[in-house]
Length: 352
Image 1 (cartoon, helix red, strand yellow):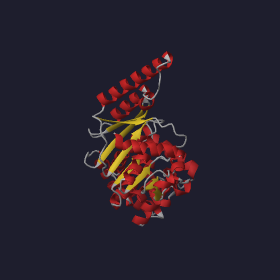
Image 2 (spheres, one colour):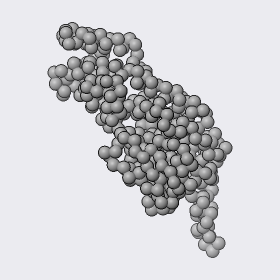
Image 3 (cartoon, helix red, strand yellow):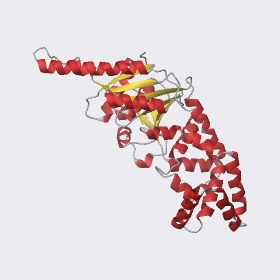
Image 4 (cartoon, one colour):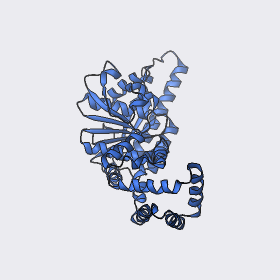
């Protein structure tokens, strides 16, 4: 089956690297905005290319910015969408302001974890998206996820939240947090009883690196995060929304290369517990439109090349249609600038 997805409250773009996922997600936001929808484009792993297209800088990360379509390309009609380049530190700051725990969240360990690739990125990303969904400002949030396996890390973030706030685990740390200041040696002793030998070694190493107050910092970090338990657990609703076909569209992006289609199938299999059964495969960089324009009547070699390339692409399309319920096809864009790519791909949405 081949038809354009109806827009829903959240649309998730995922795929391996090098398939044009971010550009296609941007084109989707532009297409919806040009058709009168209120759209927020959220990118979890901001690429240099996207910043160039949207005329944003690193300093803009973490703030919602309004993008006029005509600043992307003058051939766009009237319209605008909002864009948010994810910044874990900004999300953490917003969390502290909402829960009145700004000072506690300035904990050194939490700051390290909330740096790019620090370990909390995916969890904070789910919280940020949940914040934006709850604001009810947008008809659709277009979510550009990290490439490849990092996308799976993002999906698994809600599971990490649930495990972290397991009742028995957190009660121990609440106890430690209350007793640490008055009896630090007792807290340290209890800490030694509840962690494995491997974790003990890690704590010992980190204590040497960060100073003798590491255990104190560690407990303070746990308590600070626990004070924000409400917001972390709210983010679990985000995962539940992803698996509901009435609220989400999944667009798995690949390109018209055999290896990339196989990679998409593997990614789909790995994420099957999160995907609902009405997802889309978007095959990008298709050449059929251009190949059909080749005039090869007087050139046998070129004619053979054309036939071979068309046959290969058609086989890949058949494979896509056989393995995915819904398939979308987008042309290779020959324009020299990424802005032209976004414009061309935004026009292609209405042709699917």
